[in-house]
Each structure stands twice: as structure tokens, then as C-alpha cells.
Image 1 (cartoon, rainbow, N blue to C red):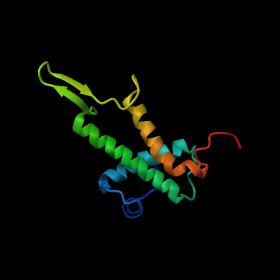
Image 2 (cartoon, rainbow, N blue to C red):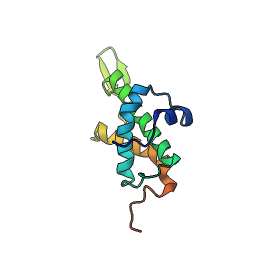
Image 3 (cartoon, one colour):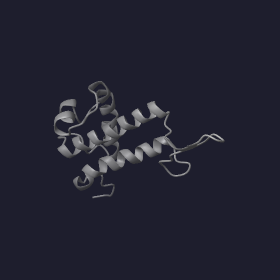
Image 4 (tube, rainbow, N blue to C red):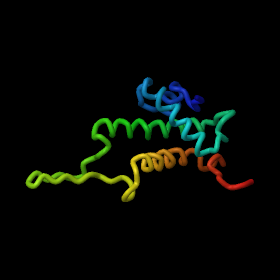
Length: 125
């Protein structure tokens, strides 16, 4: 599986903070996502924009994994001890799955770097 970015770029140029063992696993998933949203046009000579977008997606995935491990995917919004009532933060729209919310976050993170590259263009030339 192709990875658009290596750990050295992630830590030195992008200034990421993720541990290397997590990065190696997550960067493959992030690269696959970038390949999907660019329709494979990001392959070949990989630009800094593609590398930065991949790093941003890596950070989103890592943050999501950390949050899920800590809270089982649910962040408490409010809690009441009298009748024991707990409200959870809803990131997405009503009925939206966790995977859909995560995909939206990953796309927004990548879009910031890829918007002006033409790689996200879905029309016909």
C-alpha cells in the first residue's frame, strides 16, 4: 500500500506529534483516503500539499482513536446526579454514523490543503 508521507516529513515539516508506531499504521489509511477523494490523481510526483493533507488526515484519525479509546466514542456534555441523567455530545446530525462524521472531518482537513490543486475536481475537463 502506497503511503503519501513518511514519519520524518510528518514530524519535521508538518510538525506532527503522533508516536511513530501509530503513524505507520494510520498513514496508510490516510493515504488511502486521499487517493479516494482525489480519484487517484495524487499519485506519481507527490506534492507538499498532498503530503500536508495526508498528515492532517492522520491527525484527525489519531485524535478520533484517542477519543474513542478514552470515552468509548461518547463525550459527556452534562451529567446530573440526583436522578442520574447523562447527556452526550453529538458531533454529527441526527442519525449520522460515527464513520460518516469521521469521513466529514477527514475531508475538511484534507480540503484545506488540496482545494486549489485541482485534485478535488469532480467535473469533466
